[in-house]
Length: 110
Image 1 (cartoon, rainbow, N blue to C red):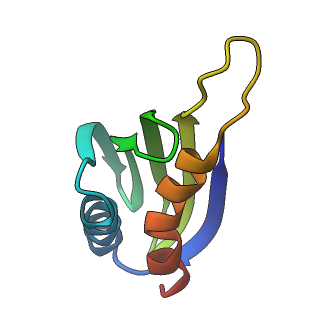
Image 2 (image 1 turned 30 degrees about the horizontal axis):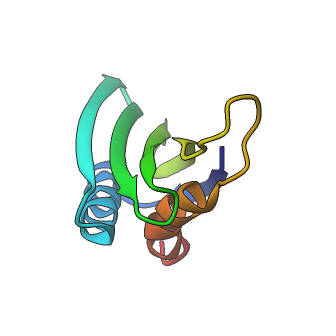
């Protein structure tokens, strides 16, 4: 598992669209699996789940992105899972770190 978290500012929908573009353009095997949104007054919350094939690890890796906040101030959490071929413990997390790298630069530019 790899994790990246950051406070971000900007338009909620613009941030989600940029995240989606970064993930989908970051790997030709990336796919959008599902998502959910909740809005109440000024509070916005979204979850996005992606998956891709990791050529380095020879397996599939998932990325879950959560974005929550209000008035253009949001907390972003991106967590990867999968990517290990070991039975009892993780020995290969290269694919997970690579998946996070697909959004890290875009988030840092916000």
